Image (tube, rainbow, N blue to C red; front, top):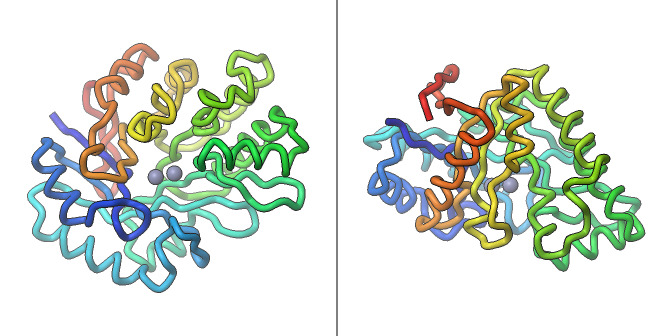
Length: 277
Ligand SMILES: [Zn+2]
Ligand SMILES: [Zn+2]
């Protein structure tokens, strides 16, 4: 039975383990497939991104590791989408050896304020809503989803990263009602948008590992919509430490089954194949 995570961070960006340490831990935990996906926002970088000057060295280190590894190892990036600034785009990332590309929205654009990350600390999210949207959380959440849909329309990335990560700080801040009709409408519109593509949606357990939320992304309700729309899913931990390589995996499997999925998709280097859950 295959066991994969196509979403991993190391000391090349904001992770705590080196690629070699991550690989060793993955072998010990029975993984058959891993992809290293450094945070990337070419040609920019924040303190949590792969530095611009390090792209080629990162690629070389992963490629070398992959050659000797007893399991499948892919070189990838988790590329940010910030409209008009940076986008997950193979024409750029292939020049740095990308075999897999995750497209993720972390930053939500607001009215002339400092960009803020939905993945950031609760205080950053609260300040972002106050400063960029005059405290109007519905507007902020709708702006997040509009960004996700724009990314899906323009990117050629294979995987959509942590689809509803906007929920991450909602457990602490309770800034919106996940059962509100307008929120469900945003989810439905986004699923329609994904269903027109061949992209794979990851079930991401990273919020559990970081103790921000006791659920996977996407929620079971959103996963159910994705299943009904025939969208492919994969399972990834978004681990930033070797200890969290498969944190939340059993919960993720249960969520997928509950949503109606019968299989998970695995990357073959030139396409995807499905295996029973
Ligand atoms: Zn991310
Ligand atoms: Zn990540």
